[in-house]
Image (cartoon, rainbow, N blue to C red):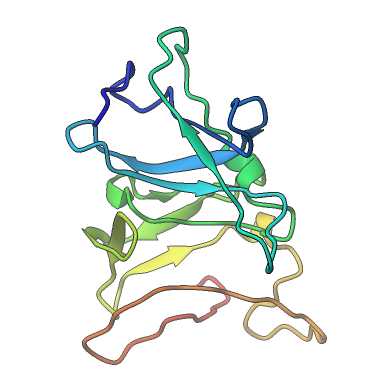
Length: 171
């Protein structure tokens, strides 16, 4: 195990070539300097279904003083928002896309998750409220909008019945 020059993991770079010349956009979800464990989302421009795609990880460059992450470029324009929910203590669900559609968390606490961390919601009064300005064509309760389409993805574990995805008019 090698020691990074930056205990924050800021000197970690992902590349598609062995020389590290083609840096790949990435978002670090977790870096543990004690164990060297990294959890990152990396945008890979092309994946082949017939040939292995090799990625290279570089670290230990003492001349790197700032984070090499570029989360906004990891997620393309097809994503209106991406919420990881690993750090829910702030009450804000930070959007990783370039859109900045940060959500508001209510009665949510930190929990273990499938990848790094997650959020614990009560199933009664907990919720993540997405900003209506970021989703202007999303229909609200009582709306007469037709033909709206959207997709949502979530990893969840539940012990009791509750709403996974719902909508209200905000009142």
